Image (cartoon, rainbow, N blue to C red; front, top):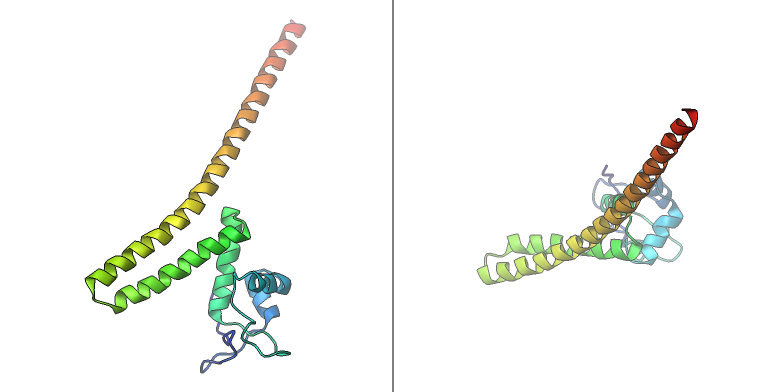
Length: 164
């Protein structure tokens, strides 16, 4: 879902309307307090360019960023610090992609490819770490399940012997 809105810095692109924090919260399934917190810890740019006493205004990119934060938080269960690293790497990769296609210098493109690879590896490290944690949890639960199944089988055998 992408909405059109006024940028956080207060400049308004032609034909776009400003979205205030309550509307953005509703669109993203968060709260204004959560959005302000994301700004405070640097996960979301916004509000910083506004004049004192003026309302925060958001762009469709801000809405997309919040939705990505929420999706990754819910999907991966990452801490806000880990989310910040993941999103920073994604933003850096977008900048690298843009520069890659703007230059035709093979040496610069190679250097950009290496930078992109570093960012992808950072993202993979975070995701793989989360997968490892989930795998450990799955293994623990499977072990507990097996213990209960074994106990139940043992109890059922004991009950059958008593009935006989």
